[in-house]
Length: 186
Image 1 (cartoon, one colour):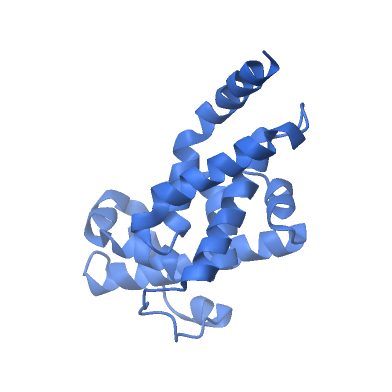
Image 2 (tube, helix red, strand yellow):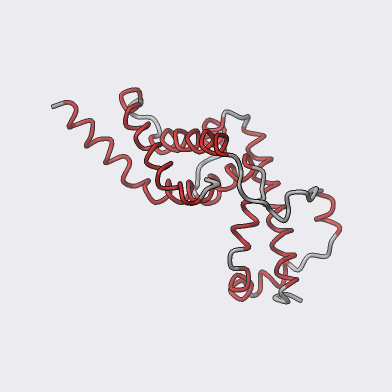
């Protein structure tokens, strides 16, 4: 009888997180054909580890950490199959400040700019360093606190904040450049 209650409890905690877990996996697994398998593997790991889950702690952070570890293992084992246009580019924060950015016009007409970017937004995200991308996505899209991200990734909170900040700068620079190339901004 206790097993059925555990299963019901696990599923009730997992259900509200299904979509965000899938989104996170889809953005971070290098082989997009394997997203569902990796997600299933992470959920099965969470299920087998569920007796170790401490009641009253943050289930969402706990299950995301399991997913993140599963993704790391898979990506490390299977290697990166994509080549990115920005991989060899050296990012310099001062370069961002020196350029005259088209951000004001992007802010005035965001819908027009977003329509022109299509898959390049995904590509820009994929060109971030893995830890930067994970910190950025967990913070901005999944709404984890800096402390929760720090705990999940086992890195200092200041490093998490730095990764999020640098990811924002890099994305701003790359997307502004793409928008300018497409003539979407003045």
